[in-house]
Length: 303
Image (cartoon, rainbow, N blue to C red; front, side):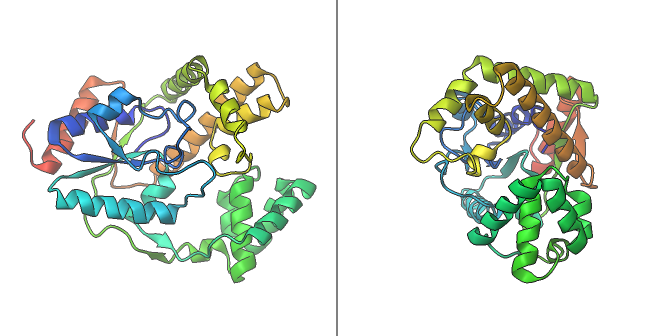
């Protein structure tokens, strides 16, 4: 586990080559075909060395949820068990980690009419006003959801409208979860400035590799809708705004950088709550050697 751009893939590939484990991607954007550059999807060479399961399993117009990930990953783990191999989960979508390892809350499914009504109200009143409405019915959820996070505000209000109960109360009753011990390894630079520099380098590489062209091709497809979950991924929303004429390319680059840093901040907040996690700094060869040794001991395999 780790924040975006921290360097998780390198350790995962090392685990494959040392121990023959199978990798399962834990990333809500990598499931989509055609979202390659903006998601920093592992390249063909990396995937040849270390195939990742649950990459490129959906088309961008198809919804994909944490519950579907839980079911798919559980099925893949069973198949890997049958092969007599170990499983390594690698990624940064922490909701998916939680759904798989700890189980899912018994929450209702999406209700499109309610979602559409809430979206219309959010556009008319503004999402800070919708956040204030959420605070009145679910203070605990409002406390942890930012006033400018429309997707999560909408979902919390939708759940309350459907059930009459606060989202925060329903999230306490989880179902499922893995019936085995899990070794949690967090890869993250100790210096926040280093992480920010890595995020900026990845942003620059994405634009140099043709990120704008990738988004333009997606926008030209007949199924394109900016409200699709796939198109709301960090980076894509910002480039869509540029291509729609809302701001220039440099502004888009800055917005991608800011949104990615905010994502990393949320990821780190969640990761710090994992009390049994082992943290390693990817900028330190000694630290990464310790991480590899820990994996080796976990698998009881000599280095």
